Length: 363
Image (cartoon, rainbow, N blue to C red; front, side):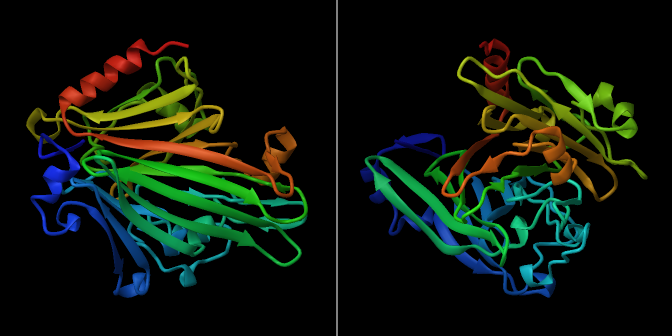
């Protein structure tokens, strides 16, 4: 059954009430038309619960805008969703097209700071976010009383005399759902071993992020600041704050304890939002898929964002990962799966329930 407008409905009960299911949920193509966004295609997904999000096939199947009942969940940068043909390939060129959004994809064969590895230069966070997808498909189908909604596409990072890697991304949700699941498979379709480096740059903003925001990184957690600037904020790393002039980014590496099934849960909440109604987001993933969890605490004016970033490697560049022995390789024909669930918690009651589950989680 689907839960819509706080009531439960069977397939038949819903179809008796609408002329077309798109009245309440579905997927629809749009195309952006202004400035550096012109020509970028967007697939808008609506679940009927209030959850709406935009998948951007022309930007590596990223998820840009995300809202719940009109309330924004994700932070969006001043660049907008820049068309991929404006991509600046210099070391820090990504900053000119870093749209933020719910998910900006970092990879496929490099991520983190720019670096030179085996005589080749790799830019900040890799190229995946600026590669248009091909074989883009979408759909919505009944499975009994459940209406499943999905978007899929393939992103290839390849070059002559170099890597030939392909990401197949499938994003799923359903009628009445308040969550979405990102299911990725990265394949080495070339003929030589290649690194796979993936970081899921999740970017949360106002009003979820504000002075009353709290973050829980699992039941127990070990926190390591990246540098001296992060050490200044270590004692408040799990708290929001008002925007501050001149704020410098603080980055932390987390090592949360997974539950008995091997899953890590990260919970962001603002229980004072909307006069105490509350608003939260829960991220969930298997730790074996993402052994590293990075936090980007950036509370500046305009650049006011809390980044939660599951990854399969460290962020100090590809060469550093190779030297430290944490660079994962895929053999020819080999593949690697990554799955991430994002759930909106629209009330304090749902946040409290999530807190209880998190507190009781054990190995």
